[in-house]
Image 1 (cartoon, one colour):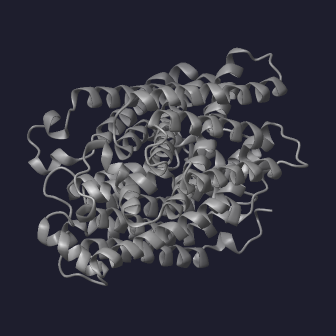
Image 2: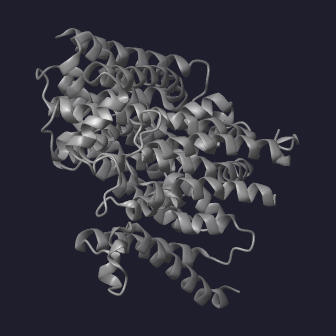
Length: 482
Length: 66
């Protein structure tokens, strides 16, 4: 065992220790386990949400895209920043409604608003299907970090299993209190590591930031701007808008808004959060520095850019700290994702079909489902091959389908009913599946559009289908209901 | 409230609306390629805009929520 692995193991033990300690003296019913008794202050909600948003994906996937695609990687920073503008209005409303009705999951919100447990089942299923890929991303990230940091001693497969087992034990013991505490350590370590790498590597290899960009600009004049085709300006604008819509549709993000103790927490956090996204800039700098320093990574391997350039540059103990930071960025979101998935399965799916079961049974079942969810995620991790960024984008196009019925439900004059909401979501999902399988573009559907429209994110098509079906079905079924 | 709605759309216009015009590498500003600088600039402005919104928003002065 080398020093890198020992340090990573140290980080893991610290996280587990914090997780167990944080639950002391608290009775862990479902409300404590998932929404921390709704008593979190601004700083904890900030950390928890930052914990969910800055995952191993931002660490490895962000640098991977900067390495492989250049400027288009900036989309990550753009959509996160703009989502906070939406949060200023959206989250206080969601929070207040959830508190009034004692909701613990995202699906509960739909159940109450549309007065339909079966719509809740559908929403929960979409959530589970959308979250599994993101859990896969965390496990993949864990696998990459641990196997690379072991300098080949531990295979990717073994590393994924180790990661999944630690994650499972961690979630079962601690719940959301543990995640919030680990999130604190995670963010400190991550910011320090990322800023250090983002500043040190360009200076070390190129003597400055501008010389680095100039060297890349000379080698490939189109790399540092959005290309004319593919990930073009059209692509980035449509993608960012779509991701902003989907940002708060993730069940784990949605339900962590419930942890806040008042609504002002969100407006306050909205102010500083955009500045926090600038941390991603340093991630891009690392990826950019790796282009000319460790060339030749292709396909899935671009996600290795950050760790490869670090190994090229530093001693094993530094790799240990980087790996430890990476481990925490997988552990915090991973634990929240698994917890949300298990809660949705137990409370919003199982409970609907077994209404006689008690709160305690549901709470117990939620915890028992944790290892099952982990196992499924491990299987997907070991049998899928796509870059982290592409997996995340796929998950987003699924989750965004919840946006229309959610936003309509917040509107006082909402005429959309449960049939419309359900039909819209299903039609949207079908459209996503069709577009993904057939690789349809907007110009295929509307040949008269100029070629620039080819790059419009096709998730928009699915969203339009969703909204149209939702409105039509709501209007048609309206008369029958009254 | 009207002022707040206007401030809300401002970051979207700044960051996304101008993108076709600023999609260029040169000149480098603060060592960054121009398009990157533009996005960073608007990230900072978004924070400032949200702070102004917070100050203007009467709901943050009341103690309505606990």
